[in-house]
Length: 125
Image (tube, rainbow, N blue to C red; front, side):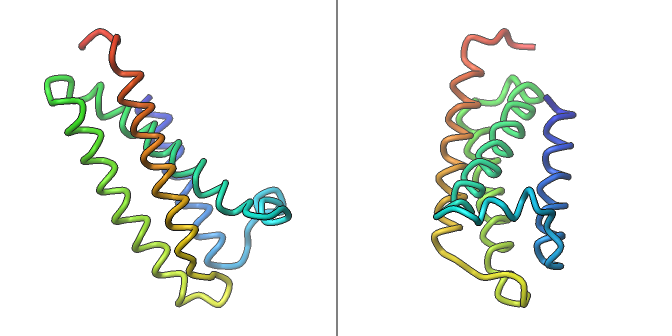
């Protein structure tokens, strides 16, 4: 899970950089071809990111309370996502949108909840 977390984090950073440069590949831009597709993208990307990172950290710190680990990573991601969304107003190719931020946050909640839920029943390492 740790490798998946690292690779997915790199993927999201690459998508952000490409979006800032206005160089998103066609398959990513296709999300904007239907209503609220970008919101779905925010929800899915950041939900998966939180899921992967929380699962990796839950296995890395098995003696820590599961809720503490999940909430900690979620809050850190929430701050980073807010900073990234706010920074979009400084790029001609991007648009700051509170609904995008909300979709990202809902994804964080769902991804964190799923990671924590899946971690119950897993043997401690």
